[in-house]
Image (cartoon, rainbow, N blue to C red; front, side, top):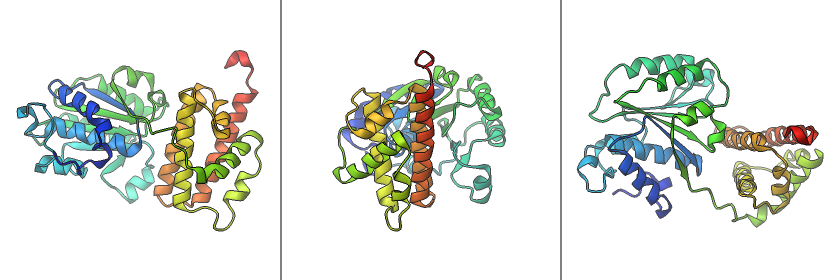
Length: 307
């Protein structure tokens, strides 16, 4: 097996999950939900599943695993396989039109195109695999159309939902899914060099002071440092979800209710995307901090009986 083809899930921590997918390949569920891990890990595991559903050698191998070396597997790993489609609700319609890529925006037009494609047989001998990322809790027109598509079983198509937490998806989507949870990032491992930034952010979430001026100072924040701080926030939220809050930032985030924590998780993922798209790091962190401050204040203002 080519261990370098899907590097994010090449380690032993993912052997059990890949073995589960290998077994599921004989009778794949129409909807698979992958939660947990990092975005890169979820995407690589989804592509592994697509390889399992399409690799011409998988069925004949004793363990049912894809070879990860044939032309089909190589095309899937690069996202260029004809029977692999990917949609992301975080991509704007304008961006999709101006810079169309392998991953398209998730909107009503794309859902219509997808439903039209589902009426045709796959190009290859396996199954068409549709990846859906960045879906929200909103019951908009596109989400309703997707639900209808999922209610129409297709022997030639499987869907994969990717989300940090299943709570970020519509319950009706989750109820239709076979769910697998990827290993969570090591939430106990902390970057000591980021402690001052974490404490500054924690103080801002409490009183709304200090962080914005510090992060916007000339030369204070670059993309690498911003990415490290976002990762620290994700680890902090993981500790909160595991009831292991210990740092000042953990305690600040622990004040959020269940809905607030799910929203926070989504905002952290969106902030990482903004960094990748070249948005100024200071602007990314300012926007995130301001949104979290307002969210935390909203929770604090609620009567205890309404939480």
